[in-house]
Image (cartoon, rainbow, N blue to C red; front, side):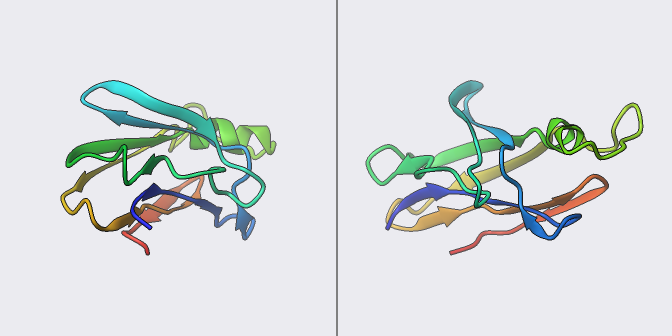
Length: 113
């Protein structure tokens, strides 16, 4: 499979981050705005082999709203409101998976498979 996928894990509660709003942006244009499903994933790939192009992309995850929705007490302003991941796509024959592991005070990401 080629294209782009993501998923979000809520490391505070040890479960998928269901209902987190995210956006995929390229050259300042929002390509997709969606929310994660019960498994913390999008219902389909963000980009497929037919729609992905080489270049730089941005994923924006609305983590502050997500944690507030779970009634997690956040400081005002929240330490993390929107997590932004800028990444490049070079190999159109490859699959790009960009997961986010997040808590109210930290996050990590990597290129998954």
